[in-house]
Image 1 (tube, rainbow, N blue to C red):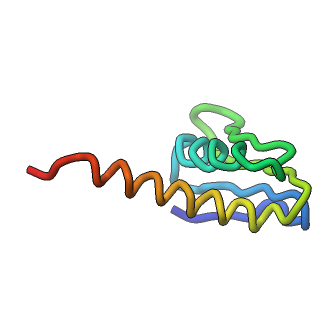
Image 2 (cartoon, rainbow, N blue to C red):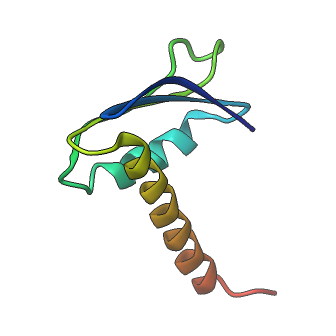
Length: 88
């Protein structure tokens, strides 16, 4: 996977996830929407067969910091899920 920063402003961020499907961007969006500081979060893909998914964030605080926090929170949730699945 490669991450392309399309727009990086203090209160807005657009990130493209090259080599991934839309699910990854949706997971981060889900975590972002839990924050009261996020004004808008969307996971988009212009065409199902072309291009890469993008995460679009608008916030009242640092959009970059909020995205990084959302990624950390998603990682923690995945660890909790992983711990609940027994190994064979």
